[in-house]
Amino acid sequence: MQKLTAQRQAILDIINRSDKHWDADEVAFALKEKGTGIGIATVYRGLAALAEQGLIESIQLADKKRYERADKKHHDHLICTLCGSIEEFCKPEIEKLQDLVAAEREFHIQGHQLLLFGLCAGCKAKES
Amino acid sequence: MQKLTAQRQAILDIINRSDKHWDADEVAFALKEKGTGIGIATVYRGLAALAEQGLIESIQLADKKRYERADKKHHDHLICTLCGSIEEFCKPEIEKLQDLVAAEREFHIQGHQLLLFGLCAGCKAKES
DNA sequence: ATGATAGTGATAATGATTATCATTCGTAAC
DNA sequence: GTTACGAATGATAATCATTATCACTATCAT
Image (tube, rainbow over all chains, first blue to last red; front, side):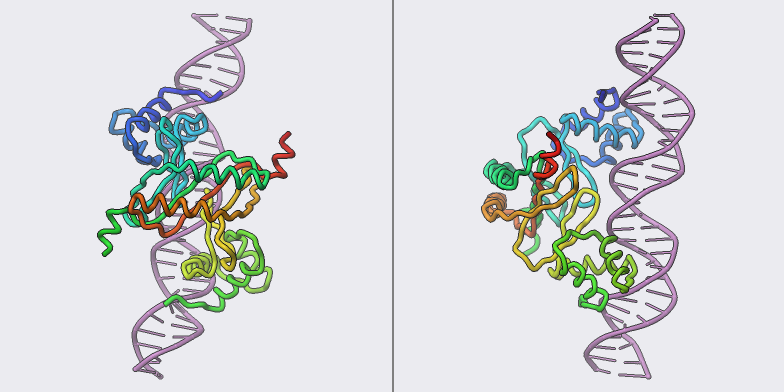
């Protein structure tokens, strides 16, 4: 019942063209620049729909949601508390341990989110 | 420079008396019930101050922040997407792997947050 | 006492997100 | 082809957690 309309394809296209982690405003701005102006409410609905269909990934930060391409390996995020940059990492061993924990509790995992906060290499250097 | 005022002690007392994960409104309501009415802005400031001092722990959920006692072992959370219940778990092995990842990237970890979403045992049973 | 500093509380403001609602699109049935 | 229905759109209002403002108060050191 969820449709992949022209607007949603435009949103998907924007997100698939880069490795950025986009928020709704950035997507709306990029669309405006491309000439494809889309109402901000439609951008929000489109992002939610695309994420629900698994066509994009979402991560929930403290202040807002961000979206990224889904066509890459699952990964988690390192977030620099100084410059706001977002790095990605992949540790299947962590996921295995998560599954173990869930099994012990008879908990059925639908998803997870692991965020590491701190200073990226660049900001760490500047700090000293 | 951060002071532990009477209001903040009242907030701390509320949180230390249970294993709940409190949001600001719940704390304000509990204080009102206790007869210690405190302005909502003061509750927010108090929670932030106490968390900064390490006297309570905070976890950032999608919609709001919640606070809990700090006087127990570090742990992460299992969140039921149906009933909203929050369970806790502890897996030091996961933390070790996180440190490993950070070391590889020359990233300096200040904190982390691991949330597992899914169905708790109770809701899983009801689902079938 | 006198500042200096931080905290308080009522309330306004912020900012991301969601709801509303009239209109439009796409498709399936007639 | 026209009709009908469900979903989507877009402008805008509303929501809701949180933060800022500001006048006032408490605390503490000189």
